[in-house]
Image (cartoon, chains in turn green, brown):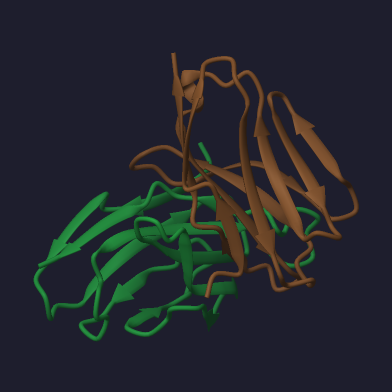
Length: 116
Length: 111
């Protein structure tokens, strides 16, 4: 059963704490992405990775960090430097450059992070 | 600054009616235009997508119309059903494979 898993579904943290969100895919996709969703603002790109051990900042990378040590995993750390971390976080993957379907991104179920 | 502008923010349609959502863009490098459907608490699902070399693409009850000269594209949902009630996002991408999303349209289909 192929797909993207994100855990946990809900996450609660105190202000000032770092928190890591998990994203795993078994689609054998090369590229992975992290988005943040806030009401009325659509999805905004945080970080993306086209290949293992390489990643680039998206539009709103400040206060976030990522790693890509394995093809199937792309964890996102929300650091204490992120001013408004409460949001719905979505992970996506795609086949990657060179594929006829490289533009198609498939999303996980999301993690709702609440920081108080 | 949103690169893709989407309207309306929300719409209500009767069962069997047509839902129309519009999007506009400025970046002429965009060459891939997908639409995503999202139910509350779930991740978006790819619904249908179009390239700028065609003016229309239809999949079942969903149709994308694309106007390259006007830099606009739209989603038509024909014979709308209560199960179509969701938030719809348009998006655009260039050869960097990064998607720029519209703000979303919440569609409510009344039975």
